[in-house]
Structures are given as C-alpha cells and as structure tokens.
Image 1 (cartoon, rainbow, N blue to C red):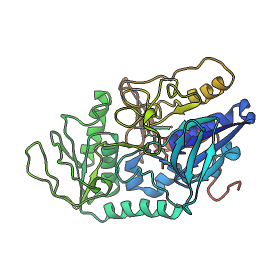
Image 2 (cartoon, protein in one colour):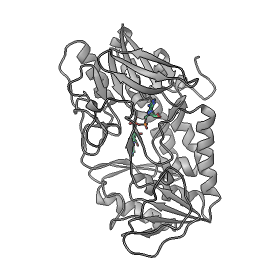
Image 3 (cartoon, rainbow, N blue to C red):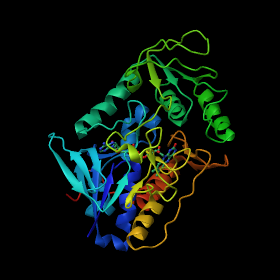
Image 4 (cartoon, rainbow, N blue to C red):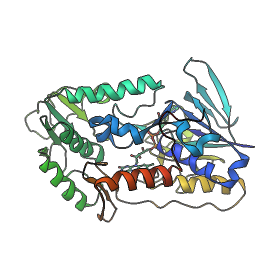
Length: 378
Ligand SMILES: Cc1cc2nc3c(=O)[nH]c(=O)nc-3n(C[C@H](O)[C@H](O)[C@H](O)COP(=O)(O)OP(=O)(O)OC[C@H]3O[C@@H](n4cnc5c(N)ncnc54)[C@H](O)[C@@H]3O)c2cc1C
C-alpha cells in the first residue's frame, strides 16, 4: 500500500482526499488526513458565517464522516508540528499533548493561512469551534454600529451579509482604493456596490487604516479606527478587520520548502520542487501570484498527478486565473451570483441557489454525496 498523508483537511485537503478516493487506483492507497479541527471548518463565505451561522454551518461546518467518499480515509485529529524530509515522516501532536511520527510515501501540504480570527491553525475541539462561531455572531449582533475594514471579498461579503441580517445596525465599509474588490473584474464591484448601497451600507473609499499591533487583528475590536490617509478617526461598536493580512500555516515546515513570504514553493503541477512525493495545494501553496489553486479546483489535477507520479506518467498543470472570481456574497434570500474572471455573472435565482448550486452541484457533484446530519458511518 502507498500511504498518502494529507496535512490539513480544510477545503483543498478535503477535496484532494475525495478526488483520490474517487479513483479506481485508490484501492492501492492508504489515505490519512491530519486536521487540527475535528470536522471541516471551511474558509469560505465569511459574511454568511458571521451573519447567519446556522445557515453557514449547513454547508461549511461538516463532520468528516458525513462525506460518503471519505469512508476509507483515516482522520487524525492533531496538530502538525514537524516534517522530516529524509525520514519521510510528519510529526503530529494530539489533543492529549502526546506526539507521534506518521510515515508517508506521498505528502500533500494543505494547511492554509490565518486570516484574522476566523481562520486559525490551532487545535480545537468541536465545542471550541462552535463557541468561536457563536461568539463572533453574538458580538456583531449586539453592536449598534459595525465598521468593516478592508476591500477584498471577505470584507465586502461581511458588509453585505451583516447589513442584510441586522437592518437596524449601521454598517460601514472602509477601503483604501477607489473601489473595493480590486482583484476582481471592474463589473463585479459595480454590481456589488449597488447591492451595498441598497442595503444602506456606508461606502468609504480612500481610507487606509492604521493597523493595530499585537493580536488586535485576530479579534473583533471596538473603535475608533485611525486612518493613515488623513481623515478623522471613525467610531464603531464593533470593528471587523478583514484586510487580507494572511499568514501561512507553515511554521511546522523546514525553511527549504518555503518562499521569502513563508508560503510553500510549488509548481502549477502542485509539486514542491526538489522533493519527490511532496505536493502543496490551497492558500498555503505559492503556485501563482494569486495563490489560486483552491478556488481554481486544482484538487482534481493534484489527485491525477499523485497517481501519475506513482505510475511514472507525465504530470498535468492546473489553469490559473489572473483575476479573482466566484461568489462574493454567498447565497442570499433572492439567489446567488457567481462572477467569472471576465466579469460575466451567472445568477441562480431564489430557491435554485440552494437546490441547484448547493444540493446538486456542491453536495453531489463536487463532494460526491454528504450524509444527513446525525447519520454518520462511524
Ligand atoms: C469548492 C471551492 C469553492 C470556492 N469558492 C470561492 C468563491 O466563490 N470565492 C472566493 O473568494 N473563494 C472561493 N474559494 C476559495 C476559498 O475561499 C479559500 O481559498 C479556501 O478556503 C482555502 O482552502 P485551503 O484548504 O487552502 O485552506 P483552509 O480551508 O483554511 O484549510 C487549512 C486547514 O489546515 C488546518 N491546519 C493548519 N495548520 C495546521 C497544522 N499545523 N496541523 C493540522 N492542521 C492544520 C487548518 O485548521 C484548516 O483546517 C473556494 C474554494 C473551494 C475549494
């Protein structure tokens, strides 16, 4: 048996495991997933997660044993704390603080990035994950004014969803450029800013925040927010920092695998150069300037390339995009908009958003079937 260890079972690690399990050749593979969370805690749809956590958890907080394709996956709940490239082992520290070395033939590095309080690497129990989810929601629900600082998809999605969920709360979006969503096609901002205005969100271009030090970025703070661009400080009951200051979860890896910014060096074939059998995918992988392998679904190519490597066949590369794309706001009561790199928009209206996009495309096609909550195999 060839042992494939997937280090980090977030969005990309999980999908890679599903793609591998889908293949006939998987019968000769032993799949092991190592995760600091006891279930999938997706990095997607921050706005929905903060504003409507019960809706978010239906699709984005899912026990691993509910994925039908993953019945053969051995999941280890623990933190990766080391990698020995020569011995081909990763060190795992379990919740009881004991450690052991897990050998691999193939290693997939998919430990993602931290991005504020909602994506952390630390070891958590299910109760701790739930408590964090609830605390952030309750903090924002209790605020009479919310300042969302940042201009990327996480900030914009938060402003839209919070304003829709809490119509009596003043929500402002503060961003440094002339427009938000600078990495998306211009048409996307035109569309989304109209929605923000309709929801009464105050839009404040040209505001670059003075970023607080210490751990302030890892929590929801209270105003005022000062601006390095010269404007008067802004007051708010709750300040949501979504300024895209991502930190790769790579402190467990040897420096020789990392680029100058601490991300894992990887080619478009997802291989880590110079290290046979080591691959990287997702937000941690420096495959292209936007590190886009997660949203560009490179998990399919990675699974094919792992199998190709094992049988000596040539590898494929995944298609990158120079613009960000996808849904910005997630599913809304009137439907969901998917924006393509060209700026073109595909709309699933009303109930079709849930039935077609989430139940059919996501659950059945992408994830290969998810058992109902409470009905698991183990
Ligand atoms: C199907 C799909 C659709 C998407 N759609 C969109 C979209 O419409 N719009 C958009 O903007 N983006 C979209 N994205 C991108 C998405 O927002 C992120 O890029 C994605 O969540 C990153 O996945 P990841 O696996 O790299 O990281 P994560 O999902 O954060 O997973 C990393 C995991 O590793 C764990 N971990 C970290 N360190 C350790 C350690 N030391 N030990 C053990 N575990 C550790 C973390 O706790 C986490 O569970 C999409 C992604 C996918 C897969």
